[in-house]
Length: 250
Image (cartoon, rainbow, N blue to C red; front, side, top):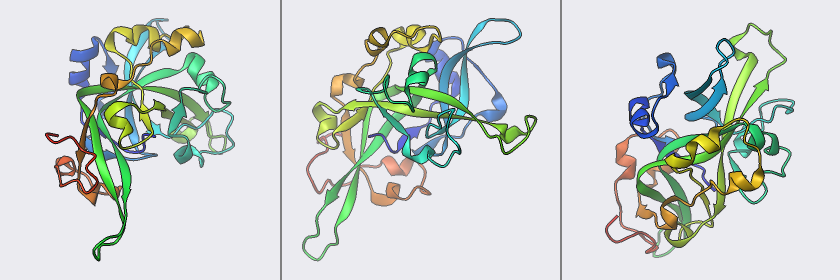
């Protein structure tokens, strides 16, 4: 599961990491320390320019929560924020996108929660943890285009572009907090992953990596992040860990 993440990397930062990249400056997102489902998120993808025929790597603002092209409406987006790597090439909601519309979603890290039982007069609550590698994570994702037939072609709302994050079984430090974790794409594998004409499931699966080989830094953070309206770098401040799952020096 990846249900909330941090995104503060700028387009210029991504150029330093990925090389040439095009984006619309009017769509640049502000940093967010609490990205939630259905929020706008940055996604790096490759599309053929209709005018020049050139394959262009671009940074786009899309909505988190995939809406399949065949969906009757966009109401199910919040349920399709993740795609399981084990079945991503088989499930009707994801298989076409996995074959032709892959992207990466830059993230600083992500959040997971563990229940803390009531004790000593304290109510039960969910303790949030921040997991990161210490560098930008290029989370493996898919994207889709959905046509809203309730509006005319020239309406800005006629087309919706959405995305999801591919996840796998969590290992090592990430597995202490949750049984699922996002997969990432190494910068050296980005060309192969983003190529629209690459479609062999075996070759594509080979490009999926567990971030930091599963050895992510785990930090207990304040419950303020539980509210999707909360934002700011203070959400990453370390707090005492009631369950002892965090790294001692995180």
